[in-house]
Structure formats: C-alpha cells, structure tokens
Image (cartoon, rainbow, N blue to C red; front, side, top):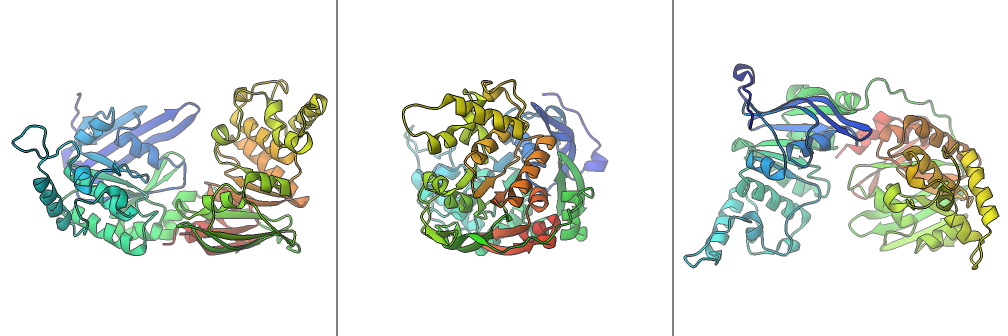
Length: 506
C-alpha cells in the first residue's frame, strides 16, 4: 500500500483527513472535490439535504464505495480503502440506520462474533467467559442488557447500543460513523446514546455523526460540516454554532422563495379523521380543499411515507376514517382508491411503476384500460389515440408509442407515469417524490402540470425529499415529527427556511 506523509505540524491531531474526494456515478457527480477532516476524540457532525453527498462520502470511508479520485489520510499517512473489511482493519466502522446485528443470536455472540472465546476442547465456546466479558463491557458504558438475550428481543435503541459496542470491541474501531442514529429513538434513549458518545470521546474514539436534527447536532457535536450539491460548503466550530446559519448554508443563498398568493379554500374534498398506524402515526387528522396542493414534510422516521401509503390502501392502519366529497369511504386497497378517483405515484418508478420491457403505450394505458375495458377484447385504436394524446400533451420525447420505456430518459419516463395517472381524470393525486431523478427542464414541466391541474380543481398531496421543491409547489405544508403534526404553513408562510427549522427541531 502506497503511503504519503502529510504535514504533521499542521495536522498533528488529525485522525482522518480527506482531500478533493470525487465520486462519479453514471450521469451524476455525487461528490465534487470534497475536503473533510476529523480530530482524535472528536464528534464531527455532517448535515445537508437529501442528495447533498453525506452518505456517499461515508460509504467511501466505510469501504462500500470506491472513490473516483482524491486522497484519504489516517494518522498523516495516505491510504486506499478498497472494501468494507479493509476499512474495518483501518479502524473505521459505520452504523447504518438499518442495523446489521444478527437477530437470532445473543447479545454476547453479536459483540464477539468472529472472536468467540474457546475452551480447551477445540470447537467449543467458553460461554461463561463470553458472558462475563460482555457484561464487563456493557457495565463500562452503563448499558443494562442481559448478555444472553437474543438481539431480536431488544428494542431498536438497545440494538443500536449493541452495534456500537460490537464496533469498539470486535472491530477495534477508532472512527465510528453514525447515520441518523436517533431517527427511531425516544428522548430518553437519545440521551442514553449521547452519554455513550461522551464515553467514547474519553477513550479517544472519534465520531462522524450524520443527522437532520439540528438541535441534536448543536448539542452533541464539536464541529459541524454542511454539505450541499456534492460539496462541503462550510465547517463551523462549536462556539460558532447557529441553526439559522447552518440552514442558510444548507439551502444556499441563490434560492429565492416564490411569492405565494392566497388560495381560496371553499370546498373540502378529502378529510382524514383519527388515522393511526402502529409505531408510526398518532391520531392524524387532515382536511384538504379542492384545487389545493398540500405538501407533507418531515425527516426520515417521521411517518410521512407510511401516512400517504395508508391513504392509498397500501399500508395497514389500526384506525382511520376517510371522507371524500362529504361521503364516508373505505380504502382497503389501491383498487378501492382508483375506483374513487384517487391515484398514487410511488417514489421508485423503475421498481414500483414502470413495465421496463414494454412500450410507452402499454405504460400509459393500464389503469385506463382497467377502468374502460374489463372484457376479453381491447380497443387497440383507442389505446393508441390515448397514448398519442398524452405524448403530445406532456411533450414526451419518444420516436413512437411502440418505443420501449427503458430507452427513454428519466424525465420522460416520469411524464409517462403522470400520463397513466391523469388518463383516468383523478380528483386527488398523491405524489411521492414526483421529480426524483429527473433533469431540471422536466422538473419544471412537471411543476407546471401540477399547478395547472390544481387550477382546474384537482387536489394534491405531495411528498418530496427536497424541501425547496415542497416550498415551491405547495400552497400549504404540514410537517411531521415522530408521527404527529409539529407545524403547518399556509400560502405566503410556506418558505424553505421555516419548513427546515420546523422539521429539524427535536
């Protein structure tokens, strides 16, 4: 492994340093010459909107991705990280939001996996020593868990604590990367996690802490780096922490809030009463007006995805009452919703929406066909006319209706899915990340289409991973946190900054 010394006088306390890291995926520059460093025994937080590049850099450091170019140094020596095992051997461990414990074995076995103490008889495990060693380590961090308990029986917080102990013990981690570690934790569990982080600092273990919760970040971090559009746009020391300043760096100074005009809210077309989803949503109530564009914002784990899916009948609820045009309705499946005039656009078009090996025509027409031709024969002429009508209306770039959908650009694929939904003349459209992965021009066309349909009386409920998009197209926004509405903004009060402040408040 080639090694190159860096200036020890300048960076003597730097455990980790990355310089001009670039990561290119086909058609996308995910990281653009990113600089970042980490001191020994430091908590360095990284914040930024979805797609800013935070997770990409962490996956490079943990060995899941290989950098396109740039340099990485540990203890002043340049190193190459080629895979996860390589990163682990260098003392870098990443704790993902989706935990990687083995649920069917015990806490002790998870913590000492690959290093189980043996007996004099070869092939046998010394369980007495295993449990006593585990108990000692858990007591050191004041974690009250029985070493013999199966991990599947633990709470999410307890499983996370086991992951941390495993990283320190089995992998000898010097750098622990925590990705949204409190997204599923209660306030008390979060405080416990923070006490563990403080103990790790005392042992000179460094933490890279990724979170959207700014109050949390300001409370636990020694420094905060802000990522935007694949770059590190600024690093603040603890004595310069300020939520407003961090948010300004996150959204940039070029974003101008659109001036909102007041929307006439006369007719309630959709109402939700007492909607509950186990461990997700608590007593949710909502009224939606005709022609209104309602944005739903919130961090990961806020319950927003489960909420909209439950409205379309694809996520189970423990209770809900729905009213559509003053009539009580039952939506137990997507078919029920479509029959009522409610349609849904999923967030993953290639997995959940498109028939990739079929033509543009067959991707536009399925719901329309189901509503109009439920017999053996299909009117091919009318199906062709329908497809040509929407290709023209939405300016879909395709040589013909017979072109395979997989050969179209992402923006044109998305417009084909919109055509499928619009073809049945819906009264309510639920859109989950409607412009995900499309180019700027297609995004603008989709926004204009949504606004025009709203003017014509169609109502919308929209989720987006980009808060500036929500603030741009919605005329009312509700913000969810831990399954409950924690804020609401109407008309001119809908701004990116206010939504971000509300969403990142603990």
